[in-house]
Image (cartoon, rainbow, N blue to C red; front, side):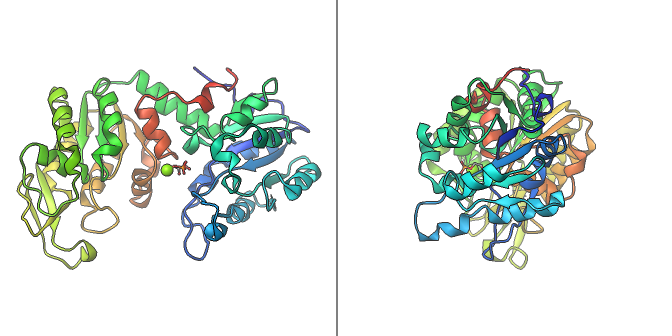
Length: 397
Ligand code: 3PG
Ligand code: MG
């Protein structure tokens, strides 16, 4: 079901309270190491300021615990970066609902942008506190959710704030509209064959996704360390690979109900020193035959070929999680081969957030896929078939 968008909303002279996901990675110097989430929010922000509206942006960053170390979670760097991207200064409030935010919100002029300090510096955010939400809600005429990466959360800014703004327009931004279009609509009416590619370290993160997709997909290709837990379940030797021993029974159950849809690697690229992948001893072995002194670090070349063949004929592709340690060559080969196959196919291709989005970006394939999700946990939750309260309560188109 389509939601009303910010573009369909009259904003001239109005204040839009926009929930964005500026939860960006920062280095030890407090510099943003990947500004994709800030860049992705630009269309919604520009839609408002170009039409003479005011924008108050709110977001969380990290998981502050209330201690001294929390300073590093300030949203200030994102306000600076946003100002650079917009080519005009962006105001920043050093609190969220306190004196500074209230004063700066009141002074905001048409076409201007204010970024509030990290929502999670206030305990009310995670608790969904109504009083905290009420103060945020009182600042604006319109609520806009463009924080796809956080849509699976029930934090105050996601649910209690739009609840408190009932009667005022409550709409989605460009990013959330596009994410819903791909992750929900494309998956509910997929072109076939529908192929899912699932990697990453843990089976436990992906159980619900596998369960849900087994009922929808034609094939599921497994890679990443998750494959070694499945290998154990089949009686394979996994050496020192990362495995979840307590998930072996579960892996057996998933294999039993997969009805041939679940494809596992046939070979594995392993090494004997994770700390020195470039310099250590490496070899390709058949899956389930990893030597005791080695660990699996990537899918092998035979698996890459098999997976590429399946991907080639797909009409819908969903990919979440890398095939190996893609940050460390040569263990990026499997992820690269899969990325190349996805890019070459003419399927609708959807890359789930987090590591797989970073991999596709780093390897230079981001422009050759249909959609790269900005949400890690949120895109997984959507692939699990979960409903999102934060989206459901917004106005219909
Ligand atoms: C994310 O990066 O996954 C989102 O910003 C949500 O953050 P959270 O997992 O801390 O709620
Ligand atoms: Mg997360």
